[in-house]
Length: 240
Length: 245
Image (cartoon, rainbow over all chains, first blue to last red; front, side, top):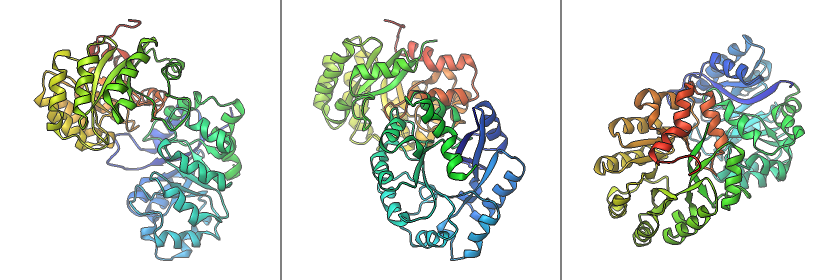
């Protein structure tokens, strides 16, 4: 099996978690489940300051080939510094993540809109946490013409109807699997928009990789669909 | 090894072909190696306890391996108490769920009195939704007040799982059902604090695939004997279940 690619891992201190969120634990879980690559960001960027978090992520990924750096940006800390954004590409970040739910800001926040406009020229893929009903619809109005892939993270079955409706209208949008753990949910997404729109993500090491793998095992997917989700789609989107 | 899922719903999923009938539910569970399950009627919990639980009873009688948890509603006391009186003595009903309009909202402890009193003579475990700290606190209060009942906290407090563990430490008649937040530190912490004998395997299907909770146990650092207790032995004891009965 070629490298399974996990598009959603997060390391660093997090007092609300009981799990070991160290890089070592992530690598241990990846080895156990034969995950070849993981896109990783830092809790420091989510909970404290994205500049510090991104610096930590960059340093972490220099030490190992299997971790790919993901930047986080917090629109509540954005005051129009475009140079900082341009630097992200030069620093080797492959993806930029947003956490409206964890950071308690609404998706229609003006500074988020400004940040997205500034990111347009950079054309890096974005991953946005979607947990509240209506957020995906709002996001569509902001990112309809964004020139790179958009990945929706943390989507569960309670908002799946809305998300699938948006995915049908936005061919360059994708869904990762970390919270898509209701029986039949992944099959439903594959039926509605195709397995080529689903990416394997786990939110390890806080959450178990095995939960997503076991759910996929029972998702009634063909070998070809499974391969797309586990690695092919990520390889295509990120030119791995 | 037998596996018993203590927390499953029939009907109410937005996703087709998962839990709409007892047959599809039983097939889904069997496919994941789950021998037995305790099923709650979403219809009874959201609409009418008496008719919903009666429909569930008829479904259970025709399906091997499925048992019922009788759903009662604190805002629909008459129908709930009728359901307790008419159906709880049935051998396929192994517990009672006490719920309100929104599982995320804590019950008012006083609103539960009449139903809990009606349940006394049956001595079957009482299920409570416990997706957050406030619901856990109500569960603890009820567990202390009704020490003759055993309480199962569904979802183990969600992201407030530490509060659920503390509640189980304070009341020995509280059991923790492990669906809810998929945090790898949660199960080992609960075992250390209250022992594996107080934990029950449950998924909350259709919100979560039971395979995801089995995956949580697979990646958590727990011994094979503790895993066996959680997956089946504790439920066999609490519900006096025997495989194939």
